[in-house]
Length: 198
Image 1 (tube, rainbow, N blue to C red):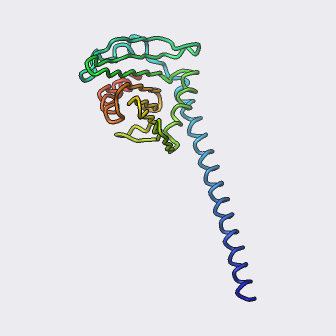
Image 2: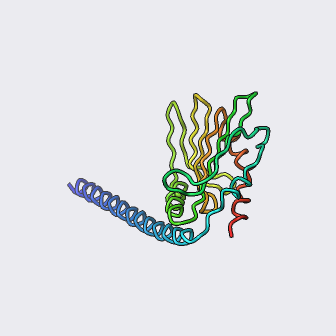
Image 3: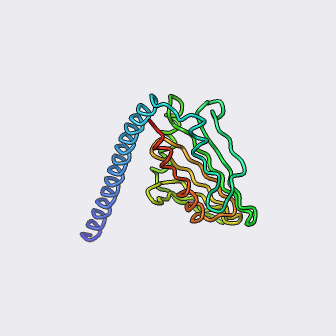
């Protein structure tokens, strides 16, 4: 009888501890969320009054070649209905059928600042998922935290990240594994963009 009571008490204590742990975790997650929201608010305020880079500056940043890949197309200017300054370019290695497309949005200004804050939160959440078709995960490579998606069958890689809390970068690489894709990202000299900021 006593052992049954002790077992029951132990079970109740175990449940109570588990509920307490869950509550603590909820409080921690909530306080992290509030902290992140304040952080985002500060970033928006800082970028809202910043002057976006001009189309000429963004175009001047684009390299003609990227490793052994030649630039085959580019587009520069305000993007879509939001009218935020952006630049995109496609690089190709015809012999190996590889294609590397980079898109950069300047998060300065009233609309761009909101986009930059939202985009910047992508890398703040660690996640990973995998199935037969793809492997998606949060990665950090040489100080850049990104959402990385690798499509297994087509051998394509996509990266999405915020650079210097201002520039929203999307990379789509065809016939390229993540390591190859990151190698080209580092040849882009994204730091040159931040050097141009007033």
